[in-house]
Image (cartoon, rainbow, N blue to C red; front, top):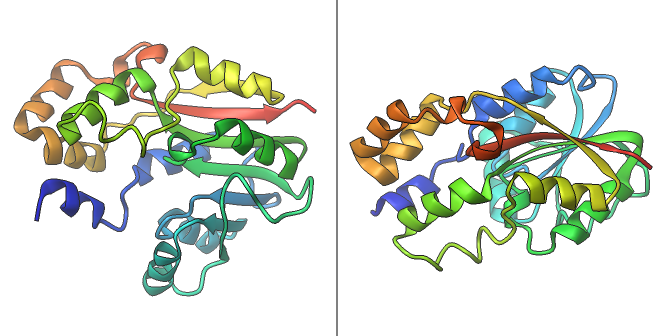
Amino acid sequence: MSKQKAFRKRDDFGNFDSNFDFLKKIKQFTKQIEILEIGSGKGRLLSKLVEEGYNVSGIELRQEYIDRSFELYGKLPVEQMSGDNMKFSDSKFDCVISFDVFEHIPDSDKHLSEVNRVLKNGGFYLLQTPNKWTNTIFETIRWKSFTSWRQDHCSLHNYWQIQKRFNKHNFEVEFYDVPIVTDFFKFKIKSFLGNFGLTLIKIINPDKLPRPLKTNFYIMAKKTN
């Protein structure tokens, strides 16, 4: 089995520790609000939030991921649904969250319009998405191709493009610095770049880069109207 296929078989293919740390930084992220997770995947974060008593539900496009989440964590409050065509009423949620999802959505304008629609006035969207500048380099090396990965990572943005895109849909953007060099991150780097990759992140620590060069953006986008 190739490293690419082996990595994709993991049930926790996102940087769970960093993502959960980000949520804990947000004082408005409480157990009293109604939360929607877009792209629940195989359910690790959703199950953790349910276990801790958050009022959360999820949506996931792939039925096989939903089925796997039930195998791993029992019956979770998740429905099969697209993040750019949600079957929820207007102004239903206080908070929407997504991790490693935004970059995969072909029509990011439609997606943000939908998120805005389902959020209450004053609601907020918490997300993590890779930086276009750094991710383009990593994915090219990972896939050994300049083009193979582009259909999957079809909505990458740089620091300034993110702000412009969200502002267009009436969101005020705030970036957060969240350490991402976890055991998962090191595993991912070693899987595709070997020991050279581990040496590289010691020399150029992603956590110490200026914000526009961060490998991952952690964002709180507040709905302004």
